[in-house]
Image 1 (cartoon, rainbow, N blue to C red):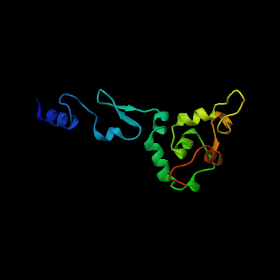
Image 2 (cartoon, helix red, strand yellow; image 1 turned 180 degrees about the vertical axis):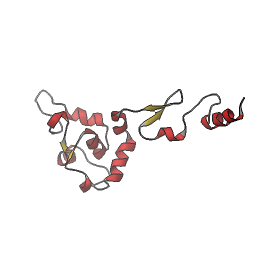
Image 3 (cartoon, rainbow, N blue to C red; image 1 turned 90 degrees about the vertical axis):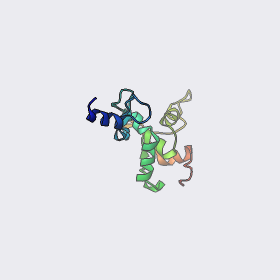
Image 4 (cartoon, rainbow, N blue to C red; image 1 turned 90 degrees about the horizontal axis):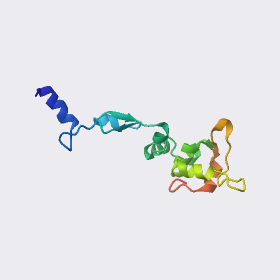
Length: 127
């Protein structure tokens, strides 16, 4: 066995001998470890639905007044600290042609007013 390969293998394997894990830099936002040791690319939905992305938005916009007046589905979910699927379910119109959360849909993208979000749910520890 070549010494250089042994050193590389010892850096890649940490917990279980014989199993190769990706290096630590492959677990940044947008990359996830896969079973074969190569980083797997995440979809835009997976990135924006993650708690890390929501926390990054709150670090970027720490006060409620800093947030824009109209938010998309992912920004609305981050604002309320809920899943984007919760926001999507609230945007679906029922039999009475009304949605739980009022919105506009210009160019096929949902836009929700920040004031409507305040009425839909509260932001714990942020207001």
